[in-house]
View (tube, rainbow, N blue to C red):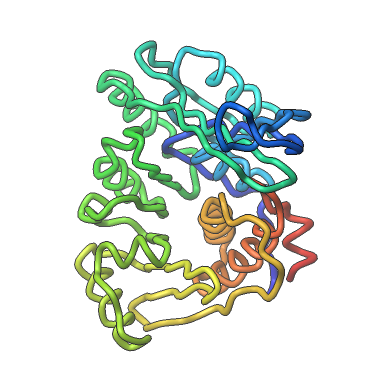
Length: 309
């Protein structure tokens, strides 16, 4: 399996960004106020999350990466802009004064997650409309588009984005959310995980039943492919040619958060660099095996992927 040259590939990532904050500390006692552990915070880390983590993974694989999203006019939004800049990503983060940038704060004691606190609300219609106009203007300088839907409101116009990208001849990969997949009709490839697909097509009895249900959905939405990430069962790709499967990488799983971001980023970069879908899936599977061995939202670099292959 050969990794294609990725340095000339241009990826445009659009979707819901968030800031992942980690408070690491030591737990040595229980609070006298309530039966909860007391964490003495010793280290604080900030990492890009959501579509920003997708973009970071694309850049780590060598692609020229642009990010288009909406943030609040706040300190978390500024942190995200700084993190994107340091990763070499061309980020256009539209500010919405009514919006709080989505922040996910995780408190960890002895490397175990004890608590997660989410801060979020939805962007206004005007900011989203401006983003749609910029999206259209960026398409000529893009090889492949990723729409990363985290259900935070940043992809209200996703149907129109898919239509514009396909009219411009650009492949569109979508990481879906929720049970209304009609809005993703016409995309090139959809990457639901096992439980997300089950929400839409119902429970399957066996592999044949999965193929039948997935093919029906693929045809209904006029997709070229449907890639289902299945945790310990690996990945399954459904195309007009049938079903192909990649078993999970045999390694210790430390943290699965953000693994889906790595999968769609690797698929997009490899497809944009000339790989076919089955090869792109094999490489995405290898990349996922690298990131689940790391703590928190993480990336797989081109060097790590080369070593894994």
